[in-house]
Image (cartoon, rainbow, N blue to C red; front, top):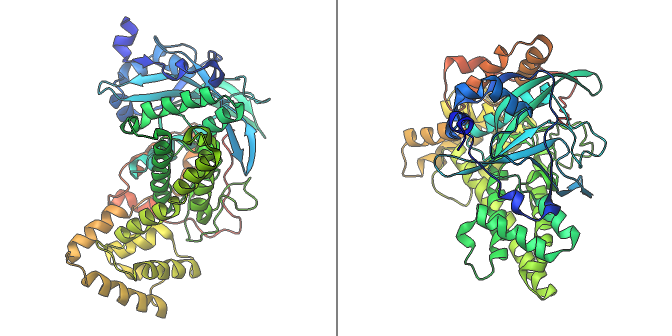
Length: 489
């Protein structure tokens, strides 16, 4: 092992690069003029076995900028396809490069990917670069999701490039270093299936099983087991999104991972006032990926995944379709079970009663009618300060509140236990859209990263109720202009 690897801690393997060459294109990042580190995720770096001090050195920053390839890395752009707003396209990493897979001191494996390091064969006319604002946005949201205990890719570092990128205006360029359990997507399987090479498809499936689901390698039909495991993970993941009011924004099949991690934080945001029809993405004009549609779209995407596996599920096509349909049919119940369990926890309910669903739906219906803040409503119920919600004083809430109190009294657990369950299930703070925009404006327009640093500190402990959290709990002031987010190009 070289001195550089010992000092910095990079310990790469490149298992994805051992798949057939059709799955990727090998190439190095395009160097940038004058990289500067603007944020480093110290706890994540430590968990990866990396030396924080050396990551901050010129050589360390050069790696984050793509100006220097660390020992053992084998940079590549992954090929994949994807249903984008329902339409299939052949895609790939148009502005990202996988450096390799970091093997941690604990023996865990994580992809290390640069986002914005220049053009690739899949750039389709794009410049392969990224702007500072969207990269900082992904850093903030992904780390907030991690703190909320939601499976997610994470952000290790952001560097500015010293170069501009041209979008609607001239913007400062940046590169994000993203960490993921893997970047295998539903779209990766769509790409393999679309090529019509069953041998390559089987190799991809076997690789996926070995990497993410080794417990099913010996199953009689391991490809059916793979489908079932991915369905379970996505049902659990999307329920977690719904429970905190997260809206992904672009649930294309290339943005759904096989590992069950949230990936690709483009036009994502957190809901303030509760409304299932909420859409933040500027490109989602029909509401396909609205908050309330996310569970349905999850099932739709998984059906596309099942289609790619048909040649592996059974040699008889009709039997393969039957197996796939049976597996997909479990998704709705799995999702709803996860969601219902999570909603019970948000209301301090430990056991199950037949009327729980109507109790939950009754609250949500009131919240929609009165445009109640989603996060704060549940937090008010947790603290008992019900006078702090816009629902307080309405006849329907008074009736609901009595029903809820009676429900809690019918369970064996104490009031204190219920309150603790709620405190562990209802975040005090989320990355409010106006607070995120405030942090990004300060960083991009004034070069002031302190606003973002304070926001990140608060978001790192979302279930802690403390004075420093208070100002970050306030919803935005009413506006005639709907909040809109944009793809991070």
